[in-house]
Picture 1 (spheres, helix red, strand yellow):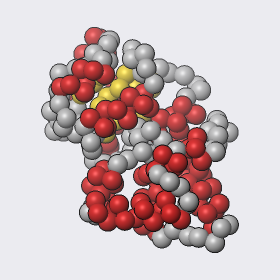
Picture 2 (tube, one colour):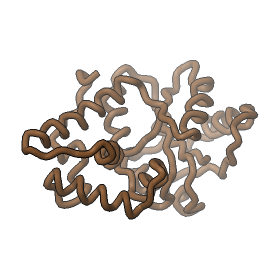
Picture 3 (cartoon, one colour):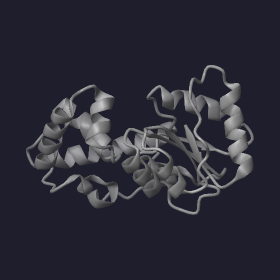
Picture 4 (cartoon, helix red, strand yellow):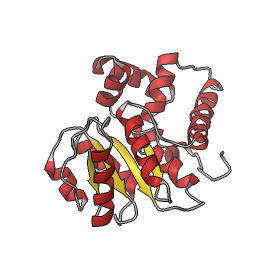
Length: 215
């Protein structure tokens, strides 16, 4: 696990949470104070803890660049406490962020729970965010059916992972199938959706407008 933050007190707090949670069998890498440090330290997959409060950059593309450098990594975003995070969480989720913790009064307790879940391959995402994402995927499938095409159950499963910008290798690992099989399914999906490449699967390219009303 590695925290990417320029805030010393937050780094110390997160490190303390991990060290005091004896059931968290995770090695904590030295903190990275910038994206450049995070990418240069190791190419091994890890859980990146991204601090939105001190990093003056968009966490979505940042996660994408970290994933390109360390394929198979997971991402937990630390967000400032606000009431209008719904649409932002949906947007970041489509960038492959696996969990969110808002830095409210009880964030430290939630932090350890979030880390446990993500390390187990689960998500730490509000139900309304997942629901909005599922609605986006369903809208795409419904539009596809109007053209007389359909995806298999496996293709629909892979489609949702593609919409979160996961690579073939990450999909292969997550579903327990070969990369060659994933590539075959991806080719079929893009063909059925009449898309040239997977970049066309991003919500913006598909014409989806993410709003707080999609709860």
